[in-house]
Amino acid sequence: MLKVENLTKEFTGTCAVKNLSFSVEEGKIFGLLGPNGAGKTTTIRTILNIIKPTSGKISYNIRKPDDNFFNRIGYLPEERGLYKKSKVMDVILYLAEIKGMNTSDAKSKAAVWIEKLGLENMPQKKLEELSKGNQQKVQFITAVIHDPDLIILDEPFSGFDPINQQIIKDEILSFAQSGKIVILSTHQMETAEKLCTDILLLNKGEEVCSGALNDIKKKFGSNSVKVEYNGDGTALNSLPEVIHIDNYSNSAEVQLKEEILPQEFLRKIISLVEVKYYSVIEPSLNKIFIDLIKQSSN
Image (tube, rainbow, N blue to C red; front, top):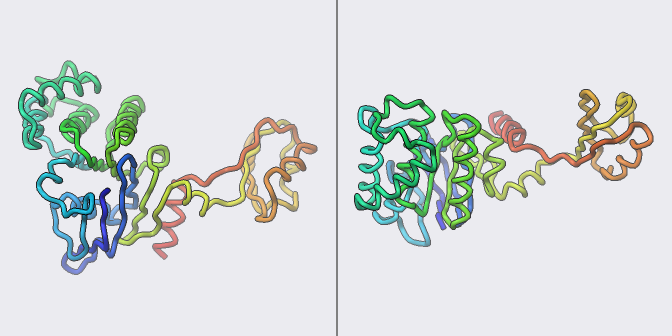
């Protein structure tokens, strides 16, 4: 388990992170989320020992991080930091050997990842000759080739089309399934919602919300349903059970009064319209994110 306790990082005249605490267990994908300037990158760089905290501590399996721990981290930064004039394979092998791999193992693992990510024709090309998406694939390989126990991914889907996004999503899920700790920082709330089991939402260096994603969605959910129907949906607008309704073409999203059970509302509306589909709506992580950031910024 990775544990961060009362982490504070101050720069001259600025508190980038204030009294932040969280933990991540093996086999979990943890979403570190927040708007630009929230303190996500500062938190990540402190975990990586790139910068020192002003106060607080970080531990891994109850121990203070040492050189062995840092060699067991895989880090994909948001900005590309590869050697653009160098060849793809040379960069992968160089960074793998920095993480303690011998050349033979590094070549073997590199070949597997190159095939897996569809870079078979590119090992001898210079990085600057690759598309942004393929450069991101190379950087992803360098982050995970040494089979790290803790994987920190900062905007890993940058530059990818939907097909390659899905490939990387599948790999991230496989890391968690194999018992690794994964910390994911992204602005793509829909992706975070699909991948993360737990999240921490930051704003202005402070925690806004944290916990299991399912629990958070229940906490911030409203009593709302989605209805798809045939017929005249305007009849739904004036029902006394309704607080607010968004009508679309043959569908509606309806916020019900707190005391109204969704099944009771369904029984009522089937006499008004032909119901094709009916479901209780959970709030999206994107909506929770926007609402909470607005509240914390006021």
